[in-house]
Amino acid sequence: MSCAPIKDNRNSLLMQASLKSKIALVGLNRDDLDTLLSELNEPSFRGQQLFGWLYRSRVNSFEDMGNIPTGLRKSFEEKYRIHPLKLIYVTGSTGESTRKFLFELQTGEKVESVLMKEGKRITVCISSQVGCAVDCDFCATASMGFQKNLSVGEIVDQFLQVSKESTAPITNVVFMGMGEPFLNYDRVISAADLMNDENGIKLGAKRITISTVGITPKINRYADEKHRYKLAISLNGSSQESRLQTMPITKKYPLNDLLTAIDHFSYQSRHPVTLEYVLMAGVTDSKEDAKKLMTLLSGRRCKLNVIPYNEIGGKYKRPENHVIDSFIAALDDAPFPVTVRWSKGTDIAAGCGQLAVQKS
Ligand code: SAH
Image (cartoon, rainbow, N blue to C red):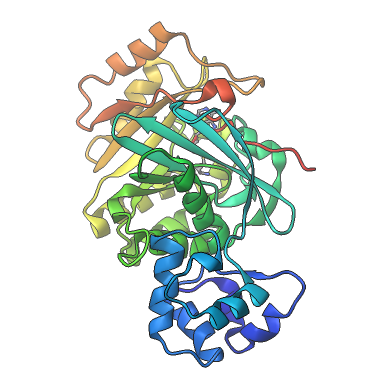
């Protein structure tokens, strides 16, 4: 799949390029680059070269594209830019285990990404939208409302620019930043495909995780299309009623339908889905909830990832550690794996659900 602006305007790349703001090349796949070069009457091997410079060598300027003739580099420079995003602020210094990156889009909006180091695992958490239309009561991004879908380039560029700031190669990508990836489905899949491309970034499919709030028609589509990226689903409730309490989307996509979609995914992919469960004091953290979860999920191919709540100054609180421990203990006999995500970066508001930027 190709990026939207190119797909929609295959025949007018040069016309678009003459517009005031230059088109960014990051986000274009091999086919897009071939089209672009054929419009410039260049042979198709140049597409391969350009792809390598953008995604393998990750250069920041056309000058650095050694094997591209000077004349062609000049015309690139006149019409295009490499990066769609401008890095404007980094919170946390090199060497710290969690750092937050603030980017500005060409249209002025801002998005955040987070880089996390844990032993050999280096993960970048990327955003798929500016703001979010899904109104989860406990999530900071919801307070921004929905502003726009990110383009393929704006998604992939978060990876490229963060990777340049990382002291070691990035091993994993999670779509757990701002936004709901399955409400920007085509672009998120194209971005994952680009990051997975073996001639470019070459990140293994199982090292890319897409986290959805549970848009069931899209989960079914994802299952039917047999994508190989890992799927995580935010469960966050042990019953229809408890989920509805914090996630209004449960009204549109009821828990029962979600469970059916989860089963469909397991059947199609033969891989377990990860169910994320945020522990909020007095809301989702009782032993009763743990028991209900056990019943709900037994017999299903899944993993449960328990996430102690990261506070955002609102009405929800993180449970005391002993409550977290007894919740986990109540799941001791669960027939599915249970893990706890001790979110990193809460001191710099970079933990799960803490990403939000003010409109400037
Ligand atoms: N929209 C997607 C991805 C973004 S949220 C989704 O809903 O899955 C990534 C994860 O962080 C989700 O599981 C979400 O439930 C969780 N989350 C949101 N706010 C949180 C908070 N304040 N503390 C802990 N986890 C949170």
